[in-house]
Image (tube, rainbow, N blue to C red; front, side, top):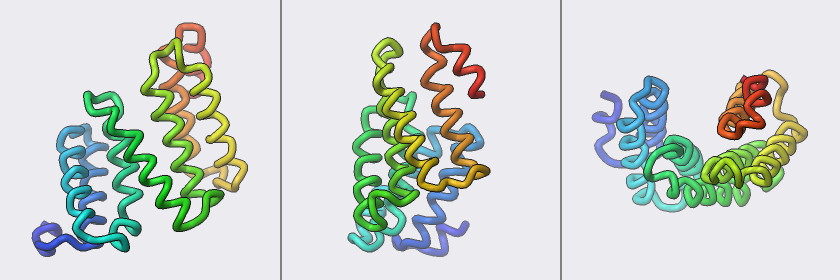
Length: 169
């Protein structure tokens, strides 16, 4: 209903669309959530740089994560790269949002590799995760748990590392 009250693309409308997509994805409606994010991404293009910079990185990150494990997963890294570049230029490369973005990128990059080729990529993910933690991500921040789950997801495919994966879950 809220989207009907804003017929033209605005930052607020696309922010509402991002929330809606998050609800759809968390309810297991992956195709619907991805379609909602795709639509939001198209509308962001009409808002110009200021609108894209304000909400774009979060939309791109959410879409990139949603695309993992789908036939469109190759699209995830360019989306994350765009988000990370915007966050780094807006806020600085060593800020928590930019470091979070790089950790997500490292996770998705590792996940795009076959299990036997992931060793170095998993190490890069762990290093990006450590930089984020060291930069001051609060010890009770939910992102810590999400990153541990992401690491467990990467390790679960490798028979020799399944015990580590189980310990992280």
